Length: 160
Image (tube, rainbow, N blue to C red):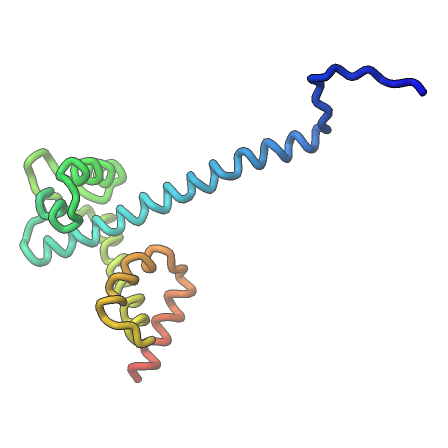
């Protein structure tokens, strides 16, 4: 029998298997990227909703108000507000109040509506108000329009 000499460090992979390996290496990156984007969207929604609430209650919204609301430093708020301004949701100047743009006000309104529907749905299921308030904060960002519509329909049927 003739043996074929293969160097000890040779890799024998088909082109197809290399593509598969490369795809697997890239997949987690894409999943993490999507998670980062989703998280950034959640933060934007939470901030514009909070800004709208503070403006409604106090007339103006300052960085200090947001730092207290979210229990974070003013540096964190300034960075987030800068991103919101870059994305067109707010306008502000140093040492001036934070104001919502038309786009930011629309996002705040949509976020508040989603929050209220999810909260009402959880309460209609029998979840305590305290738990429903906490849970709805996380759930509201991950509900599809279809699920939201069904939740809203359920709540209206329960209320009669």
